[in-house]
Length: 197
Image 1 (cartoon, rainbow, N blue to C red):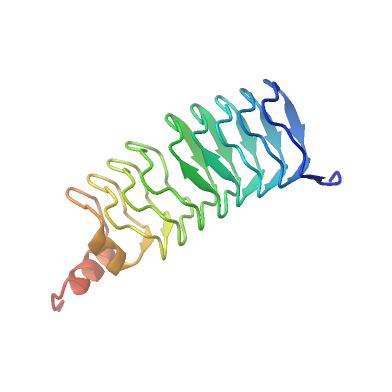
Image 2: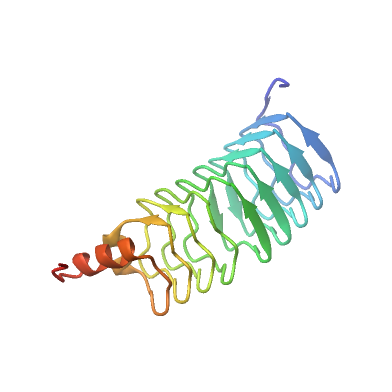
């Protein structure tokens, strides 16, 4: 890998359609940058700021965006495959449609995000903040929601079969019509004071 670019200023940069491989960025500022159609492979972005940036139609493979800030960022039609978004925060971003495959969203702040009817199967959301997020009718099969904050999260009609989640967290979510497996149903019943035989 190349040496990390540290503290570089990419504010307002116009870099559409770029292809970056194995580049490293540390605490770089991409505020309001035009990164439409960016393609990254094996890149790392640590503590970078993408406030107001346009990443629309970008594609990311085995890249890491750790502890990054996405505030009012355009992420429509982006594709993420084998990526890590560990500890990053997303606020008022335009995210739909978005494609996420085998991506780690542990410790990510997605409070209030609107992602209904999304394909989110098999993703890691460990200890993520999903408070008030709209994940209604989304496919969350086999996803890992262990320790996730689900206060007011809309999971109505979502497919949660095979997912790992805390029963206490489920009590705080909106679950009408959600599809769950037997183990989750039993844990949810017990968390709500029922005696399961």
